[in-house]
Length: 80
Image (tube, rainbow, N blue to C red; front, side, top):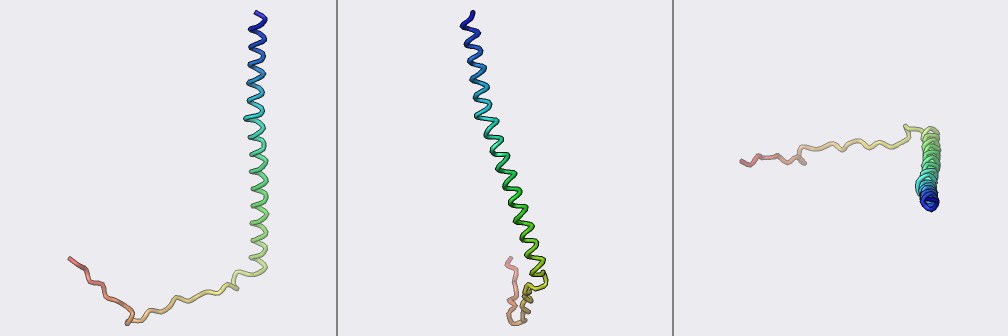
């Protein structure tokens, strides 16, 4: 009887070990890494917004669409 209890306790300890080192610790590390990436991305976005505000939105060159001439137009004929 005593050997079964020992085997059961060792099995429970093994399961706890697997749970901690294969689930809890990797999830904690991943969560920490994802939070850090979100903070970094937020900082980059705020930096870009500051750069856009200082450089101004109206300074970008706008290209006017080229006007098409009637000579450039090719008539389309429907084929039946």
